[in-house]
Image (tube, rainbow, N blue to C red):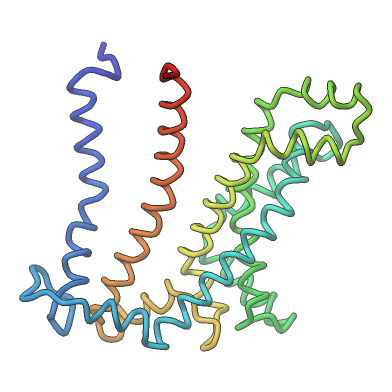
Length: 267
């Protein structure tokens, strides 16, 4: 039986990581290519496609839309998911299992089915091709992600901290603001990050209910690939990959540095 620190296990982990990252070893070089279409290996290198990605309205508007919709979805999802997670973890009530099933439903229902439903329902409400419609649809899809993260954090939360604050005369809202929220802050940040990425990356719903002025970046990338295989597509992919890498790596590095300072002896 192998330990997780043995050489074969480490080698297997490295091979799996390389296999997962392999597509980016093709996409990133193509983003610097001088070829007029997607081509690997690149015949030459330049930064022209990156310039087009950040200056061409056909790409900047979808990027702006995705950021706005992602931020709106993150805020609305956390506002709705937080009380739902508290109710599921700390209270027993009739219909609790049914509520949990309903909240987790977007995980199992095919997105194409939900996209068709949103197109029909939001069409009656005149929310198709609007920011509001996209934010509401993405919020419904992101709720399971946020609830799973928040409920996991709440199950390990030491409620004696809240009881101690209550015994000292603290009101519930004050206890939540000064005790509960700071302890759960990492869980909220992780949930918000995953919700934003989930919304930013969503394509199927956007294909159905986004319009010309509310086109998201994944939809623009999909259209670009179908119509002309524009190499700006590889530049956009590289920018997104780098942004996600930074968003994940920076907190990990900060935690590692803080942990190292905590265990190092004081001079």
